[in-house]
Amino acid sequence: MDRLLGKSSNSLDNDKNKPFYSNTRRHYKPFQSSPSVAFRRSGSSLAKGILALVAIVFFYFLLFSSTEPKKVIRLKDQPTYTKHDTTCSVVLCNPLNKCSTWLPNKAYTWSQLSEAGIFRDLSTIQVGVGCELRIRVEGRVDGGEWLRIPNGMTECTETGYGTHCRNFVELDLKADILIMASQMKTIMQDRSSKSKEMILVQPSLEKNEKLDVTLISQFSVNRLDTFAKAIENWQGPISAAIYLTNPNDIDQLVDYFNEQQNRDIYARVTLTIVKPNYVNNEHLAYPINHLRNIAITESSTEYIFVLDADFTPSANLHNYIHKRLIPYIMFQSTKIPDTAWVVPCFAMREEYSQMALPNTYNELRQLVEKDIAYITDPGAGHGPTLAVEVALVRPFLLGNPLAYEVCFESQWEPYYVLHRSAPLYDARFKNQGGDKQSHALQLNAEKYRFMVLREAFMVHKDHSKMVWPDGGFEKAQKAANKWNYFGEFMREMESLYGRNPRWPRGCSATAIGWQDQRRDTIGFAAGLA
Image 1 (cartoon, helix red, strand yellow):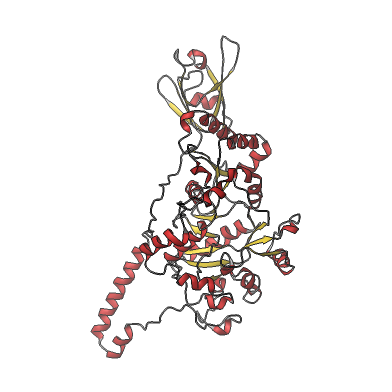
Image 2: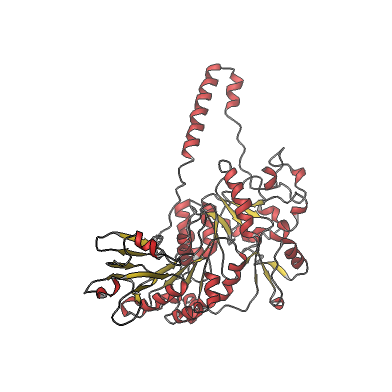
């Protein structure tokens, strides 16, 4: 297992096995000699016995206390996130109040309806959110057969549909993102909804394993086609939040999903539609971290991978995480600390926009060598990942290990795989600027280790500057009360975690320290100011 992480089995810090990087001025933790040395020198058997007893108690404490979940420090002024139970279902009851629950997109036979006691004897119908229900009845006086049942409670009595739906013989229950979007459109036509944030969730039509990783993203309606590329490359579960920047966005959303092809693409995505408060202009500041937190909350797997909509994961990324990384984490669960598993991100230059994205690491390496692809924001943003200097080179020398460790640097904004128990994102950050940096900084303050994965990557194509819907980004940048990474946020972090939260607290002695990264040290020095 040590070899998977590029470590020598003989020594945790053997410079002979590290041809590229010296150990000078690394972030070594102070070495402390074992207290048992003094006891051995004294030769006191009583002291040895006491020490052994203390050691047993100590390891017993570690064994049983490690099962307790780590308590994460909560940031101020954060919303409370609760998973929405919006799975479509219909409850049918007969006159004897015998009720049964029915799920969508399935064919039910008359024998199943009869066994439930509702065949030709239906009393009440409860239709959940996101459902579209039609029932077939016999003997209607108007000659029709199918009735469309609205959401909520319907009574098959004189006060409801009369006796028309009592003679019930068949049901047609459907649920998909078009139905959910259409229901959101209906809700938004009510004027009282204008001042409320409203959330509707269309669950994935696929069942997911709990021990898996969910791709997390967020975007507005103008990125639907862009994110479809990420869906195509990711074989695992996906949870995304889509933001209706203005009321007219719901029309565009409904039109998009009126196309069967688009519904098929998004069928395996848990898609959350978020309608903000439209009373004032605050909704124009894109709530990027709030949306990430919503999508994370609506996911159900043990691990998450947050990705922006304009990035496309490598075709092997989900399988790499699911089949290699997660089993490794589970096998080493008692030995490794809390870790953020960083996925290197690359960009392709705009003049090569017609070229297909690389599918394999070898294809990516060739594009980097030809200067067609490059590391995104090679300065403070993604430079500390060392994707070009290490990930694309060292695998040939070290037998293609799983990951390598790097030290945290101030203003770094990596994308990573995390356990879902990790802190959520700071919802006070909106639009661009500090949204990912603040999260990485809190992980560092929580003493997370940062490990960069090999053989997997994400990539996007350069494009012209993004235009935010209704000028939201430009207007928000001018706001006097904009939440600031270097101001209010940093002061809060210092009050919660102590002085210098930007110091690499989880970085081990065997990591590639900032001096070894062969990069300008200005960014790191700023973190110590």
